[in-house]
Amino acid sequence: MEFDKLVHQPTRLQLFAYLYRHGETSFSDLADDLDVTEGNLSSHLQRIEDADAVRVEKEFVDRKPRTSYELTETGREKFEEHVGTLEALIDGLDNGG
Amino acid sequence: MEFDKLVHQPTRLQLFAYLYRHGETSFSDLADDLDVTEGNLSSHLQRIEDADAVRVEKEFVDRKPRTSYELTETGREKFEEHVGTLEALIDGLDNGG
Image (tube, rainbow over all chains, first blue to last red):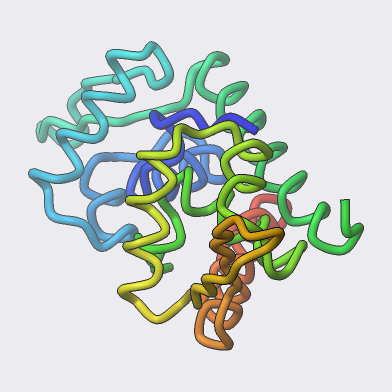
């Protein structure tokens, strides 16, 4: 059983789950909903972006800059694989295997 | 959503899952079955023991020393809580919540 540290780290696991579920989300919504500091959020998003698992979009909304994040196909696959590993671990508990 | 780092760290998560499922297990069986080095295993078991989540038993079997590990009630509870958190995360994916 292998865990991908990119996805397994607690804050990033929540980020992946959030983006997987909600699709494209602004930086400020992520910071609010996940209850992490902006500095912490930035550094985790950067690491996920470096792995090509998230795509960043910068635009202006009502003349204010807005930065949004969305999982790439790679990101969705990595997360799905990770959930599969966790499900296997949990399922194994009942089987005495 | 809170992750307990004691349980969440990948090697320890596998250790918890293994001990939860198999009950008391010798050090050498753990090292074999989890495919971790003895040094790595020792340090993770020590950390789990420091948190009172595992109990150690030393005995002689055929005149050879044998060290075994078993989750304490605290250890079982911590692991069950963690699995509950993971299940909530996974279940949430379908609900768009």
